[in-house]
Picture (spheres, rainbow, N blue to C red):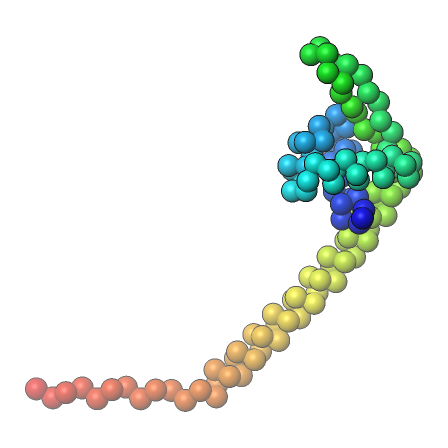
Length: 122
């Protein structure tokens, strides 16, 4: 299943380096090579990417992935959704931290101070 996070991370990476190898992309993103291949095929089928293949000097096939106009629009939309999601998560976490700080201060005021142990007279 191609989710927004995978789609965003792949589109973002390909926008910077269109000739990145699938194995390198998998390693950088922390996902399997099979998943990268699946995602790239899905992005190609949706028209978000174009691929250009050629042979390099080592007589190996090399691929370059280019974002289409639709791919750029999709990347922008995903970026905005991610920004909104992360901002909401940040605000929720910030509120939770503030509540914990208030609770800690309130509880600290309620805890009686310990009496100092009496010193033995010599």
